[in-house]
Length: 211
Image 1: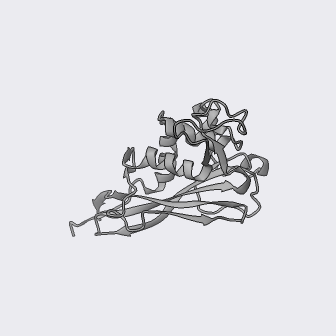
Image 2: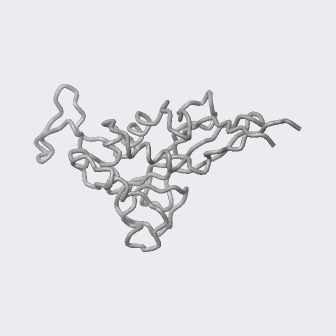
């Protein structure tokens, strides 16, 4: 009767802790994520970095006012209303599945969906200082002029989150040795105007306490 079991102590705060990590990260790729979410224009990467207050305003926290929810870009849920038609990019963070290895240890799979409206797919390379005249500009020494917004968001998320120790969550990994579900798959979401990818990160949890 002295057995212990996993109590998943911080499972219910996983999404918020990951979002807070993204808000507080000062990595260049983290700043790119927020600019791509806030600005739907092709020159999004050339905009100033957002303040923490500006980033927080993009997070959906259950606002019932439709006009307020239309301004949000980060959601802690797997589905949105079909009526959401704003031309923008979104990120959805949620628990996709929990797979127990033993009564003490489980692997948690976190879904991070990247979505962009079909009319916002292309962005200018932030290394280009001649984006005002794209027809006259040509890549120099292999520099890429255009990038796919969804691919860039995926690259930035992988760079910022893979292998990071997030307080209260643990080490978030993109790793099929830890979870066979960990991968990135392209798809269409909610309505056919949005497409992107479903990406599974994973971590192990062992919040043990007595029965």
